[in-house]
Length: 426
Ligand SMILES: *Cc1c(COP(=O)(O)O)cnc(C)c1O
Image (cartoon, rainbow, N blue to C red; front, side, top):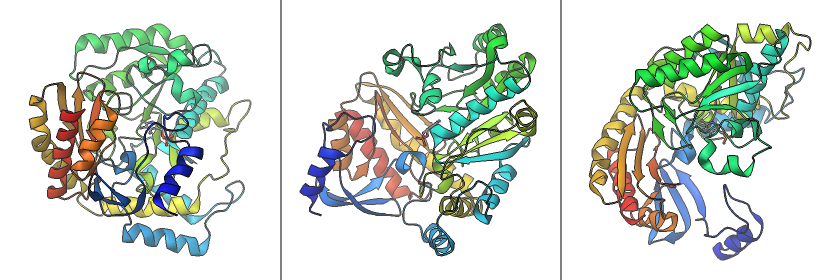
């Protein structure tokens, strides 16, 4: 298909994320991708190739077109691409579940596989509500969270997303009203810890669970906080009979410097959500893990089943590539690679702090963020980055990057230069 034909059809028929119909700006057409390079069907700003600064939204940690991951998909394709999971099972899903239990915090023992992060959060919420119902406490059905979060785009996840993002106003009266406290401060403050304790205690009789992103709040504002708050949440949940859910869909698989963000303080949740990098960015898959306490509670209730079962649950292709991606990650010294990227981002993004209009530059693990003091001019910022040969996707007042772990030092320097150029232009 000719590029202009493709763009015309895209405009006429294809909805893109968080976009009106038709879209106001034309997307770039990607023809193929390999390593950390996206190859464009037609050059943009003189660039036929872009260095990927986004890992396709946290997911492509090993880069694109990876021979090992390609082989895993191909091998599984020749056996079977899919088979239903009701009454049937298969090695890729079983291996994946056992592997996830092995590498996540200790008391997590049971795995529910689904097809996207939002659904993994829906399942987590359903588990928590049903747990309390089974125990004869159906009034415990609200969720507690801090502001600035993002947990997905379906209804329950939306209800715990940051309420100031615009979506809550739009869906007032439709979204479940949950309990919110202020967003966590970057550094540990005893007064904020006290607020968490007090508010959880005050609402405990109606709370099913506390749901948070540990250490890094992603699409809700790219904010970082002291992991010590996770311990405060754990203690308050234990003291007041509330379940604790960690949404590690963005932070999982090494992104923050530890395999899971919860590992930074060795706090274990009752329920954990994984997604995004789970399959190395190859296929859509997510997982909700829970403890035996949660699983037993549900399974001994009046309705002793977890009534959820996506058609493509445990998809063999996705499971196989997820196993291969985990093997690939854990077989290498990924901590050193993430540390190397952290150092590169710190050095490379430091000059951006001096730019007019830049409020803060922050880096944690393989995540670099430049926050402006105004909403970013998306078109101008994107153009500036593309001119530097780099793909980033700013939002709100944020220009940020979370590159694949295989990004070389030279490419990392170019990503930093592009983010800085985008900040200057946007
Ligand atoms: C992306 C994300 C989700 C939603 O995942 P999808 O696969 O897009 O549905 C949920 N929680 C967090 C923390 C995320 O970053």
